[in-house]
Amino acid sequence: MLTTLCDNLVLHGWSQHNLFLSKELNALLAAECITLHETNGLKLARVGQGDQMTLQTRIRSDQIAWLHAGQSIACDTYLGMMERVRVLLNQTLYLGLDDYESHFSFYAPGASYSKHVDRFHSDDARTVSIVIYLNDHWQTEQGGALRLHPLDCPTQDISPMACRMVVFLSAEMLHEVLPATRDRMSLTGWFRRRTNA
Ligand code: OGA
Ligand code: MN
View 1 (tube, rainbow, N blue to C red):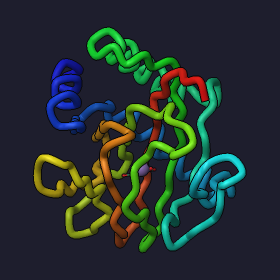
View 2 (cartoon, helix red, strand yellow; view 1 turned 60 degrees about the vertical axis):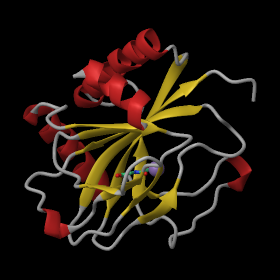
View 3 (cartoon, rainbow, N blue to C red; view 1 turned 90 degrees about the horizontal axis):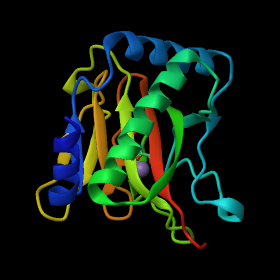
View 4 (cartoon, protein in one colour; view 1 turned 90 degrees about the vertical axis):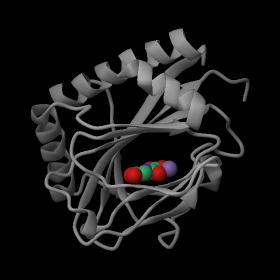
């Protein structure tokens, strides 16, 4: 699985893996995201970085909660899996990734995130983006696809089904989140490399 991930990243700039999470871990992470939602633990996401951070709900209308080590067994298990992916990416592709940051995202029906790349203009540390979906029984007709705009092939629409992981290069891959007719939950994260910024 992880060899395919590296090959796809090099060849196409992205990679998709179904059943990356076990059903059990997916259920625990989904329950944690729902609890955060119900206890006002999620905040409207902002666009930009540092002083430039603004609320622009026409660009982005999801709600997020940043993860920190030790917050739950499920999150620590997920962070442990990401650590193994980080080491593998460094061993295979020499990316020099030294850090991972991640948040839960919750898109209420109709919420979306318009076309963007994940790397900031002012900080080029974000190198590889990872999105993991937590939504049981997702039907394509419910919308909510992650739409990738790769340079070398047609647009790809990826439904946010439970246990699925999508990985792409943060600086290059233009992407967007289409609105859905139901709640849409994910874990989004970025491997960062050390920079002089
Ligand atoms: C993001 C993002 C994609 C998704 O949070 O930057 O592009 O499918 N998320 O949730
Ligand atoms: Mn993004």
